[in-house]
Length: 302
Image (cartoon, rainbow, N blue to C red; front, side, top):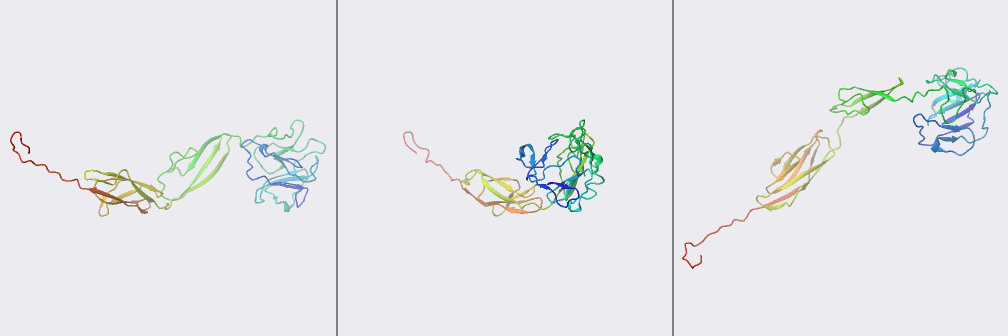
């Protein structure tokens, strides 16, 4: 939210809370009008509404930017303004005298310092040569966030495929590990972010099997049984059973004999799952014999 305070006032004249989801894009600006009007969120233009909607040059007042928890993010003091303790502004938010905005001159101060020292040294009073602008950065101000990313430095780097890229791949992590990355820009600024890779027992696996053809056939035939594992942590080990013996250790098994087939899967966390059963029936091939009462005479049948 943004609030404006008269000199040493305990309560703000206006208090405006930005709509949820308001985002200022890189190198963009947001405009707040102290007064009534129609908001245009698409253009990041908002109105505080309310009364007492103007300040004169030479007048003492302050403006405070706060987060959703009312913690002060930034503040500026104009002319002889003193922040009342009730505003939440402390010496670390603003220190010393306010920015001079001479009576009768152009309205408002202009930010010129790239980095914020929370003092009047960051600002100058606007003038004909350094006018206050609306909707753009003021002349003389260099946006510290306008640089391009020039590098990444991840630590620890031992298990990363490349610690100098934005999204490295961490492999063979065996214990919960905190990672830190320092991002540098071409204008010399840096920032640090942290993330923790947590290693623990994953979801238990579940496994099903399916037959790739008829499960009843004659001797000499076969049917391919295929397993499908959901969840669990790779690698998996497989143990196929025909209901009596272990008959295979791969993800698939070609059944050639009768039995009630299942597969038991064990994952990397030693979590075990057993599949549904598929019954395979192998019918014995019929026995055929052929004979004759030969020899026979010509013209006679056998």
